[in-house]
Length: 353
Image (cartoon, rainbow, N blue to C red; front, side, top):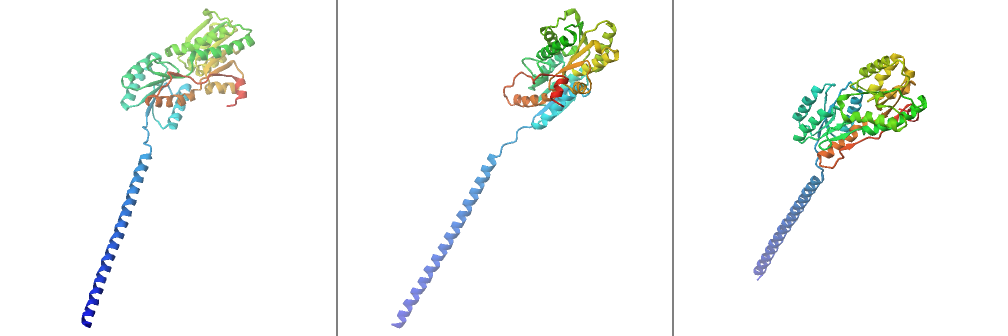
């Protein structure tokens, strides 16, 4: 009896141990599974987070390559335009490539061909030759390269232009000079002598004609036969020689008004007048607002009276973002102009530079 009872108890204990062991194994397996599931869930969440983070990062914009085609680094206007374009290129993250024609029209088309071979996206052209510029526009149009010219319109339909409204700038300074002529010469002008680069075409001609019309609208009577045009090519030395030769040929004229198409010409005219010893008989106005004019107005009171500012260094701030907008398919006005204002000695007293 005892043996039988002992045997029954032993069997019961063995079964209990087996059940406990089995339950423990299942518990461990469940814990392992839960841990694995948690790890898998965490990994999935991390991957999802990485993917989401990757999608939120903006793709870098294309770095556009824009060419600056300039007239001459020896020319004051060109230097100012180039400096402004370079600063704007840095500001807007544009790669800039440059070429200079050094006042040689034979270099224009080879430079354009080279820009095309380099794969530029757009061209800012400050060479100022209207007729050749039209050829540039046609060639670039075939390659899908937009052209933005400076000051001179290359094409009203297939290109863009940044620069002064030439005729309006002439009207503004012409009316200003009309008041000066009335004050200093009682409204009398014997000759209006205009120096300009004939190859620049209609745009610069419009500028100089605007000056004539502004003078006349301001009450100064200048007959057509007293308006004399000379081709100075926009250069200082040629403008000096023109002024000096004209004064030699007209020794008795006492009211000679000179107009230089830019301040570089104004500087040359002043030199010619001073060399001839005829400052009392002459007055000069010019265009551009360049350092040569400003420094002259600061230093001395002579017969160079005023210039009109084109804000040449500001061209880049208009041209570079305009080029980007054109490349990105946005609407851009065909012509954009900076603010125009006259600079004289009084202006510099009130606005020191």
